Length: 330
Ligand code: NDP
Image (spheres, rainbow, N blue to C red):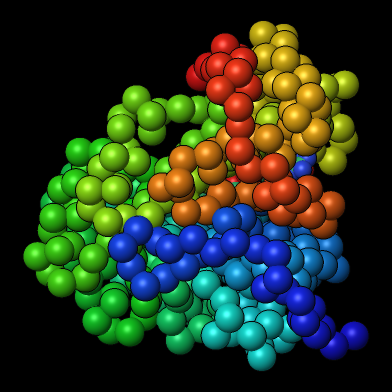
């Protein structure tokens, strides 16, 4: 059946400005790290993309290595871009990244100009795109001069292969240095993609949001649900279709008795607020007005619907925040 986007897709979603740039992103964005490779069912993958877009999720986040196998999530999204989403290309923000291992040899990972430019070229071919909307340096490279990595991002924008550039998992100090180089080159870094959730609060200790505010950058945080741990999914054991069963990224050790006790406590707070735990986890990461978007993953349409409904109850009382702080320890 030919996909036709819902006419009311922009009615409910909120779009936040990315730092001091002209770009806006939806409060909830969808990432294709898991469940969109060769291990996924194409019909489910398509249904998730359709439902996301119908709910106002205009931003789809990819990287060269998403799959499995690496590259297959971009290949799948390429079929969406050339097919169902073809009429909507200008309504979409598609991102990709390079930084992690993608091909053998000394040029297949990290932050050299050689790797970043070659990798984006491959991503564009896989996704059947002329340009991505955002291209990220996926991780800080301690060996390559930062001028080279950021210089490659600048070149990529000047070549028209990305409209905006970002960095992911850079510390506050690395971010400030990268931003200064980018400013000198004339291509500002508009966005940072760090990991952040109730169970991973490194960005608070590093005062990353303060740095991003100073630099005029937005923040889209990944794994806000701690890969599903911050939901009711594991309260009664590990379901057979969980990523624990088919991926190395979420280990059973993350579901220790101590962690599950905290998750149970957080679940009680969420229920008292009239939210699912996943919804509260998303409202919580977005509680600071400087956050641009929460970047979720999903294996089913209902998870995307659950996430978008978190917008119905965005604010917290001081008592709720204090109760969460007692349990939300990383
Ligand atoms: P989440 O923390 O949102 O975890 C998503 C997983 O949680 C889903 O796949 C599902 O698990 C479970 N889940 C989601 N919603 C619900 C719900 N409502 N109820 C119960 N369980 C739920 O994010 P991810 O870890 O998937 O990361 C999101 C995106 O962030 C990635 O796709 C990627 O784009 C980006 N990312 C970026 C990184 C970087 O280095 N820049 C690193 C990692 C991710 P299940 O699949 O088991 O059903």
